[in-house]
Image (cartoon, rainbow, N blue to C red; front, side, top):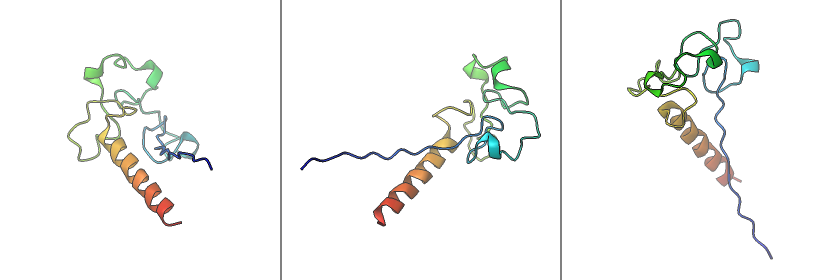
Length: 101
């Protein structure tokens, strides 16, 4: 008899158009609006951001509207507390649903 180790992988959806969590661009409610920059949160394409290489000027679009004091990171950062909260929530839901079978 052999055993197999199983790992779960949680994926947090982040829209590259509006930087919000929970959806991808094909279902983005902001498709008609200008894109939000991942690095500075302003209304321009992420690729053309003038501060993308300056971490001291990064502003997280996800954290700015929340009560998180810390938003000096970019929206794709694993340091993002809003991203971490969503990851933890999804991980907990995965664990709960897998233990109910």
